Amino acid sequence: MNSNSLVSINDISRDEILDLIERARFFEEHPNHKILDGKVVATLFFEPSTRTRLSFETAVNRLGGRVIGFSDASTSSSSKGESLKDTIMMVSNYVDLIVMRHYLEGAARYATEVTDTPVINAGDGANQHPSQTMLDLYSISKTQGTLNDLTITMVGDLKYGRTVHSLLMAMQYFNPTFHFVACPELQMPKEYKEFCDLHGIKYYEHTEFSPEVIAASDILYMTRVQRERFSDLMEYEKVKNLYTLRNSMLDVAKDNLRVLHPLPRVNEIDRDVDDNPKAYYFEQARNGLFARQAIICKALGIDVLNLKGDE
Amino acid sequence: MNTDKKELAVAALRCGTVIDHIPSSALFKAVKILGIENMDKYVTIGNNLSSHKLGTKGIIKIADVEFPESILNRIALIAPHAKVNIIRDFNVVEKRPIKLPDTIVGIVRCANPKCITNNEPMRTRFTVVNRNDVTIRCDYCGHTVKSDDAIID
Image (cartoon, rainbow over all chains, first blue to last red):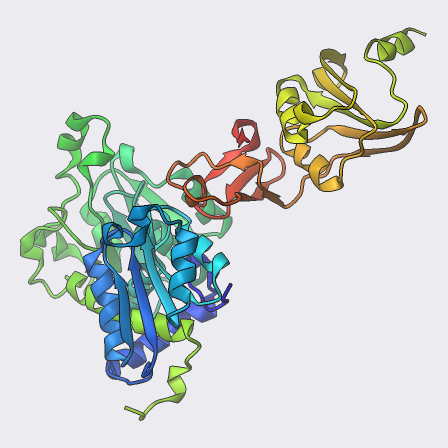
């Protein structure tokens, strides 16, 4: 097991989060830095995720490294029945770093246990996706100038959305106030509310996406309400448009408010919001590149902050 | 004495291990954890015996076997108040409660069908997150389960 691996955002401390944000900021200023010259990184995508894979591969390429891998399990030997362990052991022989996405939960944790090569979890089923959380944190920090004392409103699918769960847990160090806006079927699970209670985090639950909530927020974190989450399709039809953000709703918002969304969006953010300067979701995705460059360097034990001017 | 007769009804043991104060509902899970079905020693299993503490209880007596602590402690998952008696020459030489370990390796199957442990040839590992109601969390997928509901292999 390599201690530089990143499996879950819960494995890293407040200081490590702040350090990664500082590194991400560095890469935003210097995106092309040939510090991975001679390094080979594997991107093993047992489940397709074009957005995440391209972001990681771009990060490696911009740092001067090379990439091998596959983008779909059907083109890998796991389709022949090879175990995950065997695939990881084999790939470990070739590369300096493994970035992996898997449809099974806990797959990345298990991979770290079978190899000494560092592993970055790029999503394991509904479980963890720490690079998404890091880009969310970087986006929040960048737009608000701080992570401390912010009011964050999470909207949509709070029951199954892993991005909101991970963000909630990572924010524990920064004294946030949360508003949870969701229909009764998709409310924040009890375990996360207990987590807030345990850490003295203030939260308020709403079923209505009201102007008061928007006016109080620094960050609006929108998520997609997926039809397949509903046992009763009538219920889905009833709620699917209740949590849609429209441009006019942002009139009451504070100047510093930014709208985040992990993407892809469907109809939970109206297209007319896109031109509002408060819409931040496309830049948020771009920040993913810098956050991933930071995560890759940390996993390889490269201290980028001492390399300044080395471009 | 009356109590002696009760004891004799479940056979006295010359040497071996007695595990007492197992909740009746957990008795057969305990039998499974100890792997008793594959043993060729004398085994006595009693269930629904009256108990002041538990209402009814189960008891397991195994002749000529002393289990390693790590195996006995697994019983704590389902019978947190069980007591272990080590018998030598008809005397109880050691009597101790069972201790719940911090980590449970093997024996419990994760209830999450999408957990890696249900899809790879590997051992499960759980961390005890609540000792009062014995809640355990899968180290891989994070799924939590109360041990009463745990699937034991």
